[in-house]
Figure: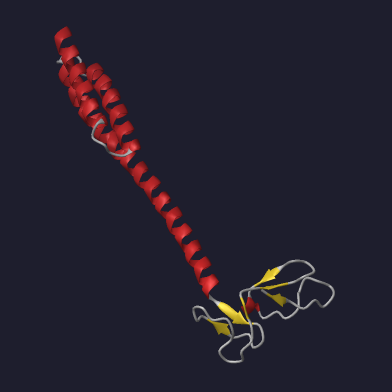
Length: 161
């Protein structure tokens, strides 16, 4: 009887060691190990008058499967959130690069996307990337349509830069 219990415990420990060394996700490994250990204890306790070693082994395998399944979904959620953050960062970088390439004519308010352009191809006016109010330091996009600051009480003309 004692031999069966110790062989079941050894088998469960070996199974747990193999699972941990499998190189899977953090939560999947932890779930499998915890499931195997708790399943082995439950299997040994429930086996009753039958072999406790076999009960521990079967319980360990079933607990491992359930723990890994639950842990895997947690790993997938973590990967998805990490991927969403990376995509959001790339979108922000893309927007910033597009904003740097897009310039506006300060005179005719035409959008110019020519790389390396220093003046407007239509009127020859200077190119700007943003408009700002010198009084309140508010920054506007050139396509906002504002010629004067809507926030200042005095009619302050917006400057380009």
